[in-house]
Length: 233
Image 1: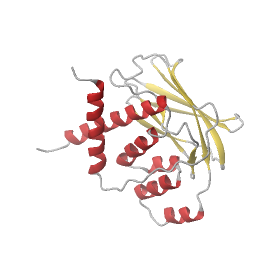
Image 2: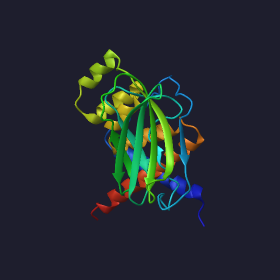
Image 3: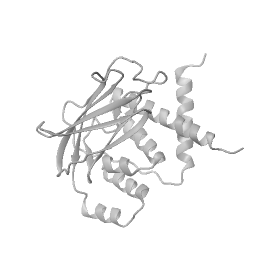
Image 4: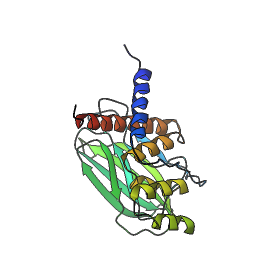
């Protein structure tokens, strides 16, 4: 029998081979110094058909929990949904005082990254996200998450860099280097997203780190399978 560590080593070997196959230079994510308020968490319910039977992936906000995620533009919130059945993601957006601002709902039937745009126009400042994954029994959340982010205008020099290129992947690199996670992840291509998730995993606490590593491995294996399926001998 092979150990889990054996398969983990294979997964990360594939992960790095996929990263190396792209032509885009991958930027370092430089996290800001701002600490996240107390309360950021992901609470997983029992494993049911709402959770993938294989792997250790969980419903996870793809956002820092140990430091404050920053954004410059109207934000798009990203989550990893592990369900193999029809699901609903409910998101409550609150201001820094806990006042409710907006309810957002996203539905789907396939596992993977779900990006949800915030529809109301937000000003600079700090915000809270309360999210829940519901499936099977739609009245019950199988997993709940609380996270925070801050909208802050880019420094003028960085604004100029972003304005000087129309290429989304290059803009993602600029945002990552400046510490603006939300914009970097939104604009990133698949290869860049895998790299950003790996970098974020190295900064997170044990539970979120484990979630992000498992998600990166799942996405890497899917990407590798897709490439293999389209390869002509």
